[in-house]
Image (cartoon, rainbow, N blue to C red; front, side, top):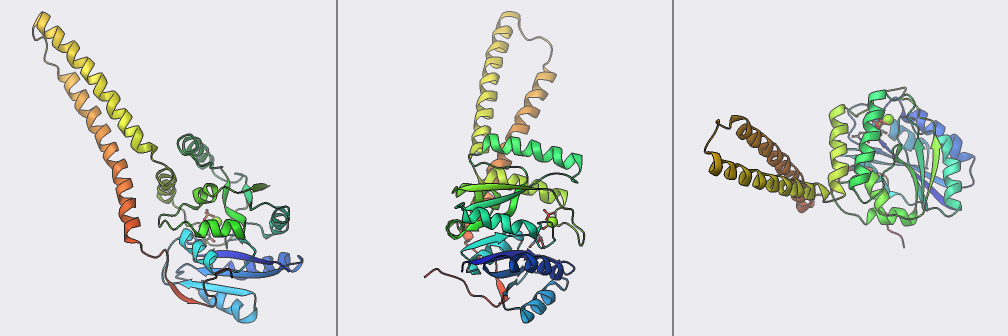
Length: 312
Ligand code: UDP
Ligand code: MG
């Protein structure tokens, strides 16, 4: 019988762990598969770990990893993927926003031969402003990056062993999963589901988190922002040269006229702005290079009942 692994990162989710497990079991027990549920405690400051340990004591199918501090969901997910043994994995949030009732359908997709089965959520319940920003963002990111990003497609997905291994082979420390999942390619099926609102605890996403995540997405997947700086600089230089020649020509014909306060200040502000943006973009890339060169591990494990898994 095939083994299905469920990977569940959890950060301050004490109120949700038990309920999540309950619902997962209900689904999994009705399916003809062996299963393991891997909880990753991402440095929670509440009783999340205690809840997980309680479950692990009572059930053999519960695996857990507890990280030494909060490393972020990307790292928690990676930690989980490294230690599961399944023929396929389903990555899910622990806040019940990813309905376990979809598991059966996702596994069906896997049995039909798809390497990735993505559960895509609708935007019902999201604020208008957030939806608007999101759809705008996806338009921009899709037009400047080479990988395909879909609004509503997140980390809630099933990966075959082939896809898991492909993801694990990517060692970059600045991980933008949405992009990585898309980058590895492989056959993919999408299942739609109605957005579920969080009932307990709160989302860890603040507005600035979202903005940073957005910038990560763009910078991680292409060099085009650097090129845009280059072209903008080139364009401004070209226009300036035309303007300078034109002005010189006028001065030679008619002598120096009114002092050019307006043009001077415009040129300074315009160029200053462009230079600062360009520097910022370059800085983003250099910062990332700096990060990658340190080659630090993505996470540190405090305690766990599962070892790193290598296919034999
Ligand atoms: N999460 C995590 N580490 C973090 C932040 C979040 O493991 O630093 C987990 C969290 O417990 C949840 C999932 O990632 O299971 C999604 O988090 P959240 O619900 O805050 O995001 P949203 O659903 O609002 O996108
Ligand atoms: Mg959530």
